[in-house]
Image (tube, rainbow, N blue to C red; front, side, top):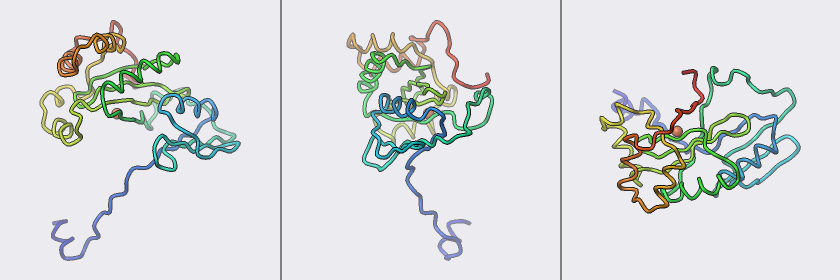
Amino acid sequence: MRAKERQEGNMAEVIRPVFHHVTIKTSRLHELVDWYCTVIGAEVNFRDANNAWTTNDEANHRVAFLSVPGLDDDPDKVRHNGMHHSAFEYPSFADLMASYERLKGEGILPAFCLDHGLTISMYYKDPEGNFVELQSDNFGDWKLSTHFMRTSEDFRANPIGTFFDPDKVWQAHMEGQPFSTLQPAVRAGAFVPDVIPDIGLPI
Ligand SMILES: [Fe+2]
């Protein structure tokens, strides 16, 4: 019906805008800016006493920060509605592993790690408890990973993913285990951590 109406000119076509940026309210402006600069390689394009606009690509800003008096932490953030995480994708698993190693050297470790089937994902927690997912696509191709998400019984059975211990997976990667065998092993649970981590949900 919608297509027919569109053909007949009764309904305006949706012109899809491209996702551009997120903006975070914070009472730790400089600490958060420094963290995003370290974790995702953000650079500040503009900053004043209360605000900052940063980007890690050619866009004028991708992550912005508003810091005004009156903001405060949510002591029950985990139980309250709102955004759970933002996500950034590397072109390869090797880049994800190299970044894990770099951040570990900076004393920044993921809060939890999951193989979602379509991505290998490492979730970091910023200084105010916002999660940032760093990921690489398991198929190296959005069309293929989208097809997997839509059609795979494996994904249907386990859409949240399989936890893994990042050190153990990084070690296997450094020892030369190819991604073609490492990823299925991660998905199958060969690297599950001793303690299942908190993923920031009330469960
Ligand atoms: Fe995600």
